[in-house]
Amino acid sequence: MSRRASTPPAGVLGCAVHATVTVTFIAHKQGLSTGAGPAHTGILIEAGLEVPAACFAAVPATARRLDYAAVRVHFAPRPRTAHKGDFGHVLVVGGAPGFGGAARLAAEAAARTGAGLVTLATHPSHAGTIGLARPEIMCHGVADATALRSLMARASVIAIGPGLGQSAWGRALFALVRDVDLPRVFDADALNLLAADPAPLARAILTPHPGEAGRLLGVTTSAVGEDRFAAARDLAERYAAITLLKGAGTVVQAPAGLPWVIGGGNPGMASGGMGDVLTGIVAGLVAQGHALEEAAALGACVHAEAGDRAAAAGGERGLLAGDLLDHVRAVVNPPQRA
Image (cartoon, rainbow, N blue to C red):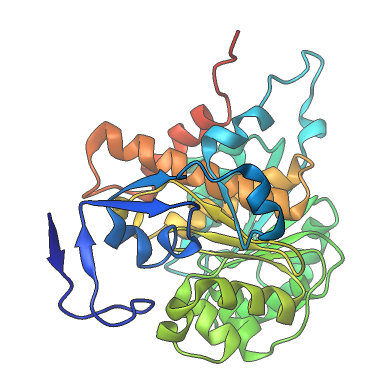
């Protein structure tokens, strides 16, 4: 059974059906796993046709698939002698007036992922309120970049962008973080500010959705959707940063090497705040010692799995970003197999 797509979205070449089942022969095709592909394939069956493994030696792979089942081994039990200093200090920068929730979601996600300490540098207008709601987060009201500088000195990694805005306040904080010699995760308005003044970054992860990716590349959102692999590669090369291109079949691309295509996730995750949670997860993993590319790929898998568990618990419609947080904790603490 299938139905015809009325208006082909970006990445669909002409007429395409929404299949119930798709059989792909010999090898998995990268377009089946990202962008518009998953919406058109339905249940995907791979038929190898008994082609000998030796035949693939001369055919280089173009991408790598990754899902939570493959990465859960990275979340082994902690040593019994562990202390909070072993697991890093995340500094989240964001939360302009009216957008404090975004910064809080990122900070709480970092904590639920296992960061030893989490500090939130946010606008003074709501710093006290966030601190009351989640006292484990060390919440500081910062009026300007000078106030932020002392907090940066204690951080292992900085996540900037959730709720940051593009006012003079946000621009000043962004300018300081952009040039600091620390691992950084850029999201939301930090990406929009970077697009307005593009420059290569060092030790950085970018987490754009397709619209932000288009602004960073100076192209349309549709152009990004037409070739998500090329867009992720162009971003990684242009900004010298690990790129995590969000959307169905998230693509994680380093400046060199094959991309990762992330399995999992669901349409219920298309709601406000989900990207802020992802930013916090990735920053929390960097704080715990994961290399940047690994943290981006692991973080995308954790985020997708937490979203799938939350949807299974209550459905996709009405799924909120905050619903993922308890599931994030469970995902990074998998039962140990005998």
